Image 1: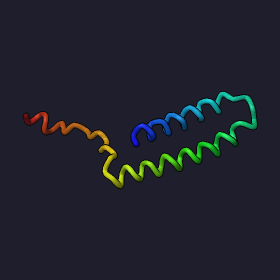
Image 2: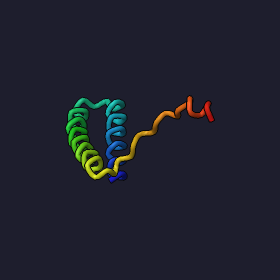
Image 3: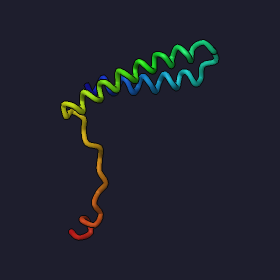
Image 4: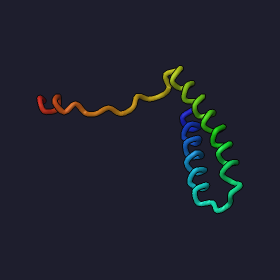
Length: 70
């Protein structure tokens, strides 16, 4: 699941990067439709990971007061 989520993120980023440098006017609407489908797929995967507890907790700030007291 993590690899699928990572590949979806790479896909959205590379599509946006490629579209920004494209000189053709017909490509951006097609890419936007594909990006919508990719985003929906990634969102469903993220919800599934949260449901099963597979998603990691984001990194937390270090408690500096505790470090000073040690």
